[in-house]
Length: 349
Image 1 (cartoon, rainbow, N blue to C red):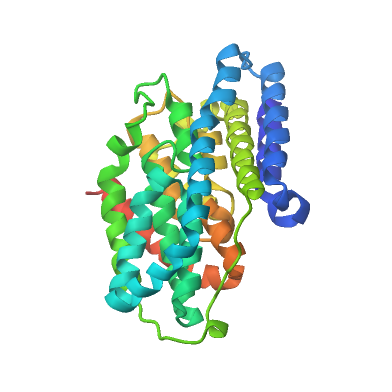
Image 2: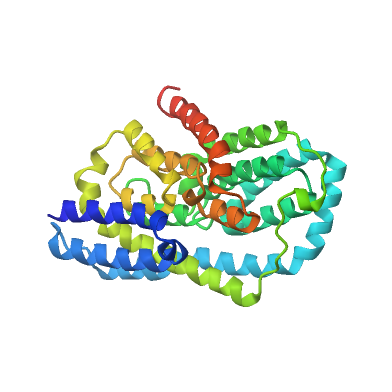
């Protein structure tokens, strides 16, 4: 019975954010409620008790690092926003569009693991608003940069919710979920990938236009909005920890027994469902390094394909008013090409 219930909850989590605007706009609260409900049902109907003091401690403390990083970098970014925009224009004119795009994508991808994916996405919006190149080119630049941010942020547990959840869920297992675990496992794959994405973005060419012909966002956040975003991040990560533990019976019965290549392709679903949610549902301390690689690499690549797949996508598309169709036209073929390339690298080379 618990298996059918968990599958039903998983389908609700997958579909409701796309079908109901109220759910989409209150995703953190929705996941907190479904996470708590899933945990209670699995605790009562599953093969083992799941609600423990260790879980409570993890749910309360694991989100703190990412929340503090989001708050501090958000306040710091607000202070430097105005002078930053002026320097962006000068740098773009001096370097030229192609070299500027290459360096921007690579820098945001690497820095996102330290300043968080959220702040990297906000910086991206400011940069794109300042350079005034044609809309088609700027859309390409945003999508490639969001692929890089989503991948780079997975290198540390403060980069994004997915990496925070991964370290929390793998702690105590054979992989030893410490602060450097993700760099040890994925650095050799992610860093060359960031260079590849940056080169792809640098090969594109834009032309100078007026501000009305480019994509622009010119809005300074208040301190209250910055604090609210940090609080939402805390709730979001807490909800995912509860959700991941609640899905443990399903993980133990089915997901943990899948082969690594199958797990890799199954996670193409992260294009339409936030990849941190799937990480919370799939990862467990008993998994092998190959399974973990299959899960996380599939999640972070496919997460860039559509707007709902990752936090930087959502932020950039909302602020710069990029449509789902425009994103999909670029994101899906590029994401599938990356998925195929990494599949060969991971399982054949």
